[in-house]
Length: 324
Image 1 (tube, helix red, strand yellow):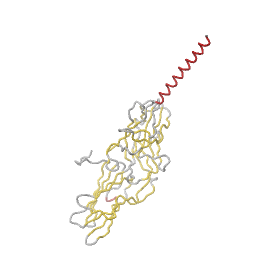
Image 2: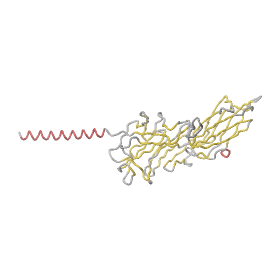
Image 3: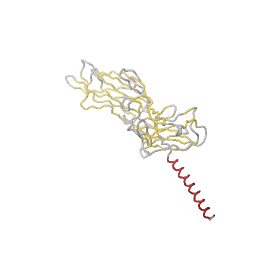
Image 4: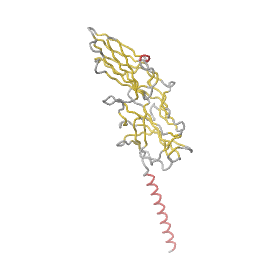
């Protein structure tokens, strides 16, 4: 009888141990999913509008783990936790991993990322180095319409600031890595009719390597390659210029030295004459800076081109004309 009781006791203890294991597994599977609340650092016009992140554009995320609790990382080794993870819109202002990613049970994470997302299998390569606090994107190809952006982890006293699941959503404040160039082209009343046919950047870098850290972003001129023309506006028939409503076109460019900009147009009097003109950097803007917007207000009259260039932040204006 005693032996039977002992056996039953062992069975009871084993059952209790199994129950504990099951409880731990449930706890592991109930970890909080990592979600992010991305915004733009400044309001932008065209390409991407406003401060809200566009719901249809996935972005890439890097997370680095430390055994340090949330707060400034003071010591200890770090290791990669998420490597170029694809984050997508998941409702409201929340974005999460296409395949869900979860917070670690202890320690903390720092996050960096970029937009739009490029898979590891493509030609564009994105990396984040927690030791140097630097995000790098190589072989980015500029098509004039893709707005390359990035965000970095918080840094305090030159130390990374880790987060844990106690935080609600991870803030991701995107900065613009490109320059925005806008053209507004007008004609003149009681002058010859001018039909605008083309606006083209000449010999502009179409591919480059970006590095970004707390001091800002930099495009390595040694890595700028694939120079070529980029057409901003094209009309085979020609668009008639008026003195009131300009013909407008917008393009994103890799920051650096400005390039020549060719205008093609027809001056229509008794006969039509095809004409061209070139805006040189010396006549307008010498350098394009990341996160800045450059407005070229152009008037074409009797074959002469008059240029007024304006440099602003990467923002838009409301209907009152007041910057916000």
